[in-house]
Image (cartoon, rainbow, N blue to C red; front, side):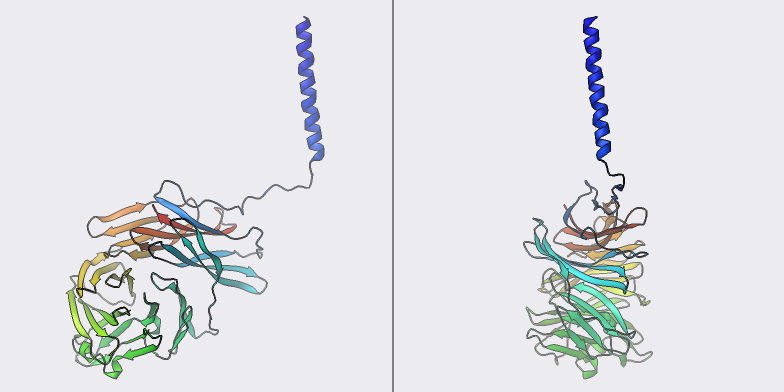
Length: 418
């Protein structure tokens, strides 16, 4: 009986202490305190176990102001990887509303992907942007395998411009919409032209422009008679496109012309540009190119002596591998069919294709066919840019919305294949 009374007294003491504790805690609470809003917290976009690692993540500072009725957005622009101790250079655009309208800025940064060491934190990229309505933006891009970042645009009336790490204006009115930056960091034109119907005389030639080894800007076109040797070898009533690739280490210029039924390669010494180009290779196509207005080209040339290139037209692509030592070109894909809804693509040194659909990565290999690299990599956000380098796939992933489409903190992640 005595033990029962003692146990009862002890329990009563404990309960009394708990009630007192709860009362004191409640007395110290701020009745005006608001619940914590976690909608602006950073999130892990990458799902583990998918064969990719996160190299670096950019997250906008907490407390960034938001203008009512707008979204602060982030969009990946480009990335470049190169070197024996590889560095990933990346660029992205930030935009957001303000009382003065939409404010935009371009950021760039660099990181070692093997150690995740930040080489350069994202900082604003300085470039000039024209005003008015007579110009068309070609976008931002790195020169392949370099940290040379450029903004390219052209005027509807003709002149083309490059701003940023390269500043250049071209007076040429031809082909400004086909401007690109070569591996050497030189601004070059792509090539386009047509032969006159039922005539062996070309009605439209082609032009290329580049910076030479001395830093001088040169522009050459068929109008000066330089490329007569190429012109007469093209059939009447045919169209053609192509690329010019300066290789300054050997002081050579390579022209790749792709007509409806063949790929044609020509070589010239840049020190003597007045000498006609020499034909070095011709590869017939089983599936002809139609030229429906959306033909484009992508390249991979980690070394000067070997580079691959692919021609993309609608849902078809052709890819080739070139060796500058043997001056030979090998056909890899011939009019293969591309799947729909590709958002970014690249090729490897052998002309095989890698691409993004949704948040998944796929490859089209000449030996193994179409295969899945990784499906549904992200828990939130989206994959936006893919690049291939030295046996690995590099990705940029972006996020600025929550699952309910409300504003989230702007994030950009660099992902690399394991």
